[in-house]
Length: 316
Image 1 (cartoon, rainbow, N blue to C red):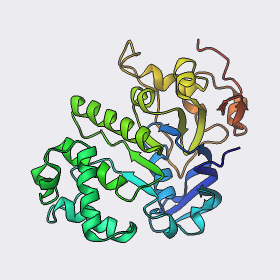
Image 2 (image 1 turned 90 degrees about the horizontal axis):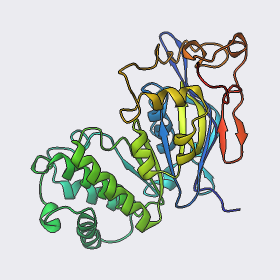
Image 3 (image 1 turned 45 degrees about the vertical axis):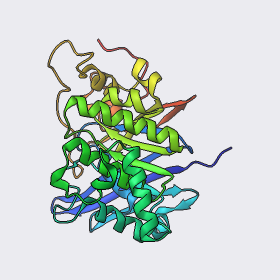
């Protein structure tokens, strides 16, 4: 069996706050094979960004990982991640806040390459021009000497994709990289990402709120709720026949499927005040007393997994 490119195993992340211990992630498990792609979806506050920060080794001060492992290329990132710098590329959410306005765009990316990629500055400069050409920036050689304010939002996101690819990573992580862009530019950026990932044989971990994006980019999807995996499986299977009540309700809110503006009743619980049993039961239309008694196990059913023993019960 091929070793996973990335394997998150029973990961927990906790943070002590003024209101008590916040259990932000709890027993999260997921894998990405070499060249595979996984989308992570869920409401705000479900732990998506914390998962990315744990993988990247940039958890906030005071955060701990009381259990679990994050194995990348067979080595545990929680035991020290300096060796992985450059092997994981990251495309952040906001292209307007992710570049320093007082330095030229090329210099900022060349500094990343100087620290994490072999070769001379001249080699790096030549490679970066080719990367700018690959991400379809106009006048790629001249773009090296421009400042961030001289690029549009879509062009800045292309700069950030080039920066993420600059050190030839094996895994690309993208945190809702099209949120700040207009619809037309979003489509262009998603098409660009899909092409570059395929051409370079990269693994992809993509965080989004949009199931339509998942259908375009990702082989598999993990649905997070309140820091736990609610459902996991091939993207098309999950979209066509969602099992977990939370997944069903999320999909029912999607503009392509929704017939009303009604959302999911209630809110995601605070990480310092998680309900007993299934964390979704206070909002779940299928909830029974047993749902509050004990947390459900993540049931593996073929290529899929779901954390709900009532996953076959229809609504109504």
